Each structure stands twice: as C-alpha cells, then as structure tokens.
Image (cartoon, rainbow, N blue to C red; front, side):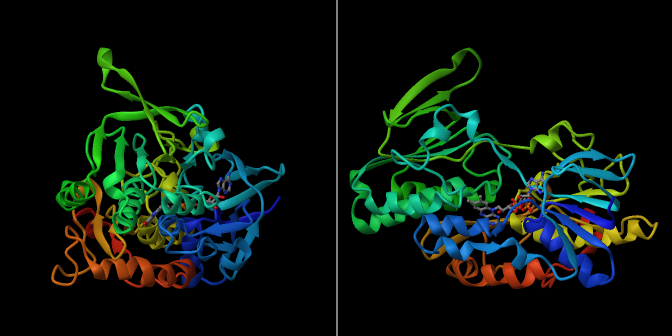
Length: 413
Ligand code: FAD
C-alpha cells in the first residue's frame, strides 16, 4: 500500500494549516491529507452569515483549491487506526502507512441527540448557525421576526466556539433593536451550563448587553426535545430529584447541537476517556504513541475549541512532527491559546483571548484593544482582517504572530 512520511487525517482548518506549515519548513517531505469532503468552510464566518453581514459563498471554497501545494490529497475518510503497524484503514478499504500521523478530523455535531431537532431544522422557525446551509435561514428568520418569543440554546461543553450561541443572540437582538421590534419580543437564552461565559473577565461586558437587550437568562436549562410543527421546545431544568421539564412555545429558536468526538476516534485506541484524541497539552503528542499527534477540535486538550486555537497549534505540531520524523523529541509547546470574538452588536466585539486555565492571553496591547470591553477595532478584525488572514495566512502556512515557542516558554505562558 501507500506510505507517507506524514499522514494527516482531516483537511479542515487544523489539517490544512498544519500541512502548509510542514511543507513550508520542508518542501520535499512526502505528505498526504485524508479528507472526504468536496468543500472546505470558514466556519467562523457563519455567525456573520446568520447576521446578514457575510454571504454564505464567502465562507466556502473547493477543497481542491485549499489543498497546500505539495500535499497529496486522499479523497476518502479514515476508519480505523492500527498504531502498532503505523497504518490507517480508509473507507475505500485501502491501508495507508505513515512515519508520523496527525489526527484532526474535527468534532461531531450530534443533531440526533435531541429528539425532533434533526427533523425540524430549516423549518418552523428552527435554525442553527452551526450549519452552512442553515446560517442563511437564521438571517431570514431574524429579518422577518415581527416580535414574539425567540429562544437561543447552548448545550453542555465542550462545543466548538463556545461563544457562538450567544453571538447569534446578540446580533439578532441588535437588529430587532434597530427595527423597533425588541420591545415586543421575549428573548431567552437557555444554557445547560452554570455561567454565561467560562472566563469571568468577559462576563461583565456581556451582562451589559444582556440587560440592554432585555434577555432572560436561564442557566442549567438543557434543550431535550423540539416539536417543530407545534413550535414548542422542551427544556430540562435543575439537577438530581429537582429536575423538571419546562415547555416553551417559540416563534423562532436558534439551536446549537451537543458535540462529541467523532465515532471513529471515540472507539479507537487513540481516544482519551473523553473520546477525543489523547494528547499532551503542551506538545500535542499522543502520550502512548510517540509518532502520533492530535490538534484542532478533535483533540483532548482543554483549550477553547476554535480556529484561533488551531492557528497556534498548527506550527507547534509541524515543528514537533518533523522533529519526531527525524528521530528526535518534540521541541515546541502550545500554551492553550484560543479566541472567541463575541459579537455583541454589529460593529462591536468583546475579544476573548485566553489560554489554559482561563489565563488571559491578549494579542494586542491594552490601549489598542481591551478584550474585556466592547471594541470597534475588534469588529474590524472579525469583519475585514481575519478572513483574509485565514485564507492567505493560516491555510498557506504563513505564520504571522504565531511563531511556535519552546516547550518551557509555553508552559510558563
Ligand atoms: P474542521 O475545520 O471542522 O475540519 C475537520 C475536517 O475533518 C473536515 O474537513 C471533515 O470533513 C474532516 N473529517 C471528518 N471525519 C473525517 C474522517 N473520518 N477522515 C478524514 N477526514 C475527516 N473559531 C474561531 O476561531 N473564531 C470564531 O469566531 C469561530 N466561530 C465559529 C462559529 C460557528 C458557528 C462554528 C460552527 C465554528 C466557529 N469556530 C470559530 C470554530 C472553528 O470553526 C473550529 O474550531 C475549527 O474549524 C476547527 O478546525 P478543525 O480542523 O479541528 O475542524
């Protein structure tokens, strides 16, 4: 069968960036990417599509067009890992060998976990920015909303872009405020979690907007069922013996599906207890298989699952994978950086940037952007600067502001 120096599972944000970074460092390495999809998506843009700011086309590219030059594209999905034999079995039955394996197939959106949702989305006012085809429906619903009840839900963690459920809500409320329908609206946020955002420094700025828009916050409220035609959502609230089921009628509902490790990862020898690819938090190397790395949404590290995290992880894995390929040990470290640009209104963002343990890791000096306050410059980043940085920087292995740091520096970041 085929054999590669480096085999990458998943040609998403993390896989493409890592491949490009490796090929920039060593052009002649034999590298393949296993990726079944025809298209690649800039998912951070979907929040903007839902808000009517970006066209959905803007977030989509043919996979062939984003494959780094020099990478061999294997158009199939990975099914089984044989780490002892250094091989992966693909959906077409082929077995492919590798020197170093990099695993980054993303996270699974578990639509079926909530009865009624899979059938209802796209109709009856049930939508989600978590799907390319549905983000434009969010925009339509928000535009047509003439008052009534709008629900926004957030499942248990981890999810990719933990701020996205409330971003959808704030941007919708801002439009309703401008259109004058907000006073006739009952907007409710239902989160399975106990707090508005996991890093406390950002909560006060978000609470200002919750109050301004008159949003009703429901903590520990988990969406468990949707009756699409009946336009009713069922929530479970409380814990232990105190759990009660609460039904809410809605005019529109923005649902974020529960998210889990992909099945073929969860059932594989690579999995941690969480089901995700087990990695050392700093080197991103598998603790049991020294020639396997994981990154992006599929890995077990406790960072915020974001493209911003993958942007910082990719060069770390690139450097370490090449070191291991050469018979050495990992040299670069990742500090857990992740970022969540919280779109609190069209034109302003609370730019959450933090590493492991919720430690604030701002990219900009405080006088330029104070991440804990709403900022116009941060909006400019999201709206204008970050998309080209993604397509032409991150996916091309041009590593502006993401020089991989030595292991010790990352640990003390
Ligand atoms: P993905 O980019 O999802 O790629 C995974 C790839 O693996 C896919 O191409 C898939 O086809 C492939 N794959 C799956 N199974 C297999 C298999 N068996 N074999 C081979 N390949 C496989 N991030 C931010 O930084 N900022 C934001 O503002 C932001 N907002 C977001 C808003 C929304 C609505 C969403 C949905 C996400 C947002 N994110 C944001 C998160 C960001 O998109 C992800 O964290 C990022 O895409 C993770 O990259 P990844 O490569 O791990 O996964």
